[in-house]
Image (cartoon, rainbow, N blue to C red; front, side, top):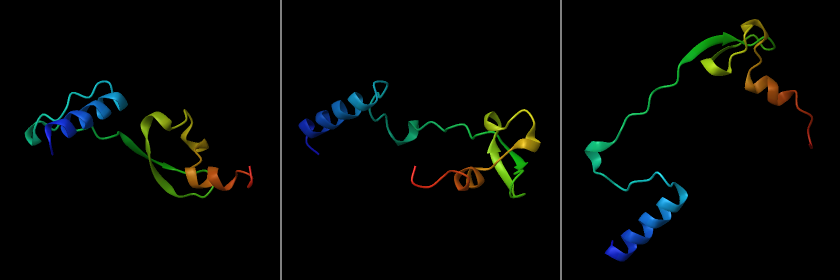
Length: 77
């Protein structure tokens, strides 16, 4: 790529993400922390689901999975 195209690409990425610092090399890639998951049984379908800890209700017996939530929504709406 030419220098002009590199600069245009950098400015475009910087506009989308103000904290973007530019490419710093392949060795400087930071690892993302994995989500803390917990197994919970859905109260509607009875299936065991791995769910992020921050989305589990205080009473896990009342947990409803995304599939059951989606099927309970009215269509066309």
